[in-house]
Amino acid sequence: MQSWLSNRIGSVKSESELRFSILIQEREKIEAMKPKIAEGPFHAFYDPMKAVYDGLMAKYGGDFDIVRAEMPKVNYVVDSLPSRIQKAMKTTAELLFFSSDTLAKQLSHHPELTQQEYVGVFCGIKGYTGNVYDRGQGSAGLVIEAGGRCYRVILKPTLNLLEVYLVSISSLNADTLREFLNSKPII
Image (cartoon, rainbow, N blue to C red):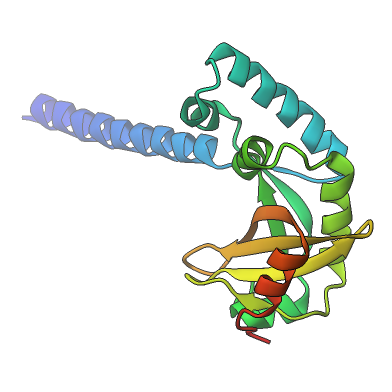
């Protein structure tokens, strides 16, 4: 009887240890899937991500879907999210992120934008006091003037409103600027 009980207790302990081990492995997998956070000068994020993007485009013959799937998962911290934008987007998010996935989309759709233009737009967001425009589905639009040009910037919150991402930057000509300024401001 004692032997059976000892074996059973050992078996339960082993099952418990196995479950615990599986939980640890699952947690590690989830942690590995979370994007890394990059801070500091933009070139420290841009240069390596652009090199990876260029290499993947060459490797996969320009298949953008595969390139996006293979891009490292890294979020660059643009800066603190200005309170005016927080209020307009009804979020408590404190930081504005720019993901490596968005950079890949930007490089594909707006290859004309330079690293300096990104930095100029980021600087324009820091102290933003202009209108925040409704772009639908919880997204907000800004008009940023940098280096003598105007840019349309689209920001999108996560579903739980805890994070906000810069998802698009494009330069505006006079007609598209006028059209954008005629859209509905949130504030």
